[in-house]
Image (cartoon, rainbow, N blue to C red):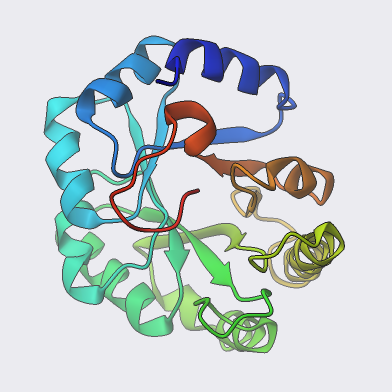
Length: 228
């Protein structure tokens, strides 16, 4: 059994002060989340709206919940009232629905655009060209209830560290391009979320300032899904 307190303490010694830790609590019980909270952790990531919505009322209300998994448009309204950030915005359709649901309750939701850099067709997200088009077309300016705060991506699922470095470097270079061209004067556009338990150190080397880590904190949980 993983000692959450010890695992968190060790993990934080490996993270620069500038890097935000999202503790990926998907498939782990409320008690485990509470234990991590009691150790000072405040940002938690879930990949299923129904699981996040179940945990939210049972845990301290100052937790910042991040949606990190693929989000269906018909699930958006479940999490919009309380979610802190949606990291996995992978289509204009989803972005439009988030804006629509947030407008209904007069919230502005922070989002990251999911960038597809991995050499795998199964990964979701915008290609760099699609991302340029979305931002350059001015569509975002009409969406007053979403705030694009940066990019998220996943590396190719491989043991080849050179490939992982290359994926994250591509994401970081693209972030710099978009930042300089479209968000130079927007301090909110500052987040680069890449890196999980197995590759977060590489991600930090390649510019990440959000890492999404679950297994290293909570241990294995075999409820399906791919470990973060």
